[in-house]
Image (tube, rainbow, N blue to C red; front, side, top):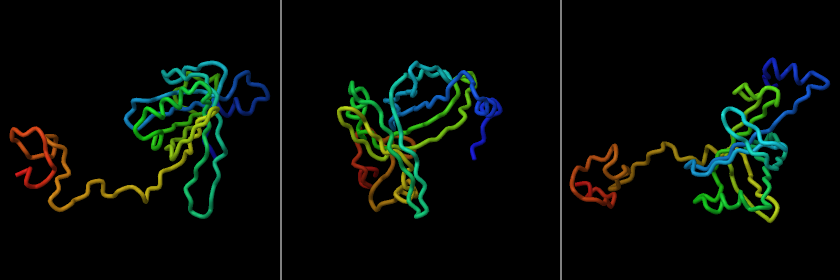
Amino acid sequence: MLDLSTVAKSVKNKLDDGGTWLVLLSVKNKDLTVQFDIVANTDDVTWNGKEFTAFPFSMDEVQESTKGSLPSFQLSVCNVERVVQSYIEGDISHGSGWDVDLMVVHSSNLANNNPEVIYSFKTLSVTADENNVIFTVGMQNPLRQQFPRRRMMTNFCQNTFKARGCTYAGADTICGKTISDCR
């Protein structure tokens, strides 16, 4: 069960609260050169110092599995003007591995910087058509991540040339990442 704030509980239990629950979506690529913040609403919303643009999107229900598979769902964002598609086509990863933060706030409690509900996901794949960009969103499989992050290979240097960890102090401007180049 979700732990809601006192304000959210009182609003939830009213028959008519005069406000609405807002679903905010913040999507950003790996190097943070692309970021868009949207809200499923008819008006733009400012929350936590960010402007969330009113933009149509929908999402499937997250299915739970008892077979050990990682949950994923479809997030469909409007693509009629090709705005989101242009972000994806301009990115080197083409939308895969982007961070997706989903927050739920109430319109009467926008001054509170803590969302009632927050989930963080990664985009697993992206498809686009003339109407929608469809992100498959979920968790990345932790078994596919390299561990440890640094891998030792014979006669190969893993450090960035002349950066922290590189012991070369000569005048060369390039490095072939071999032991002979380091010597």
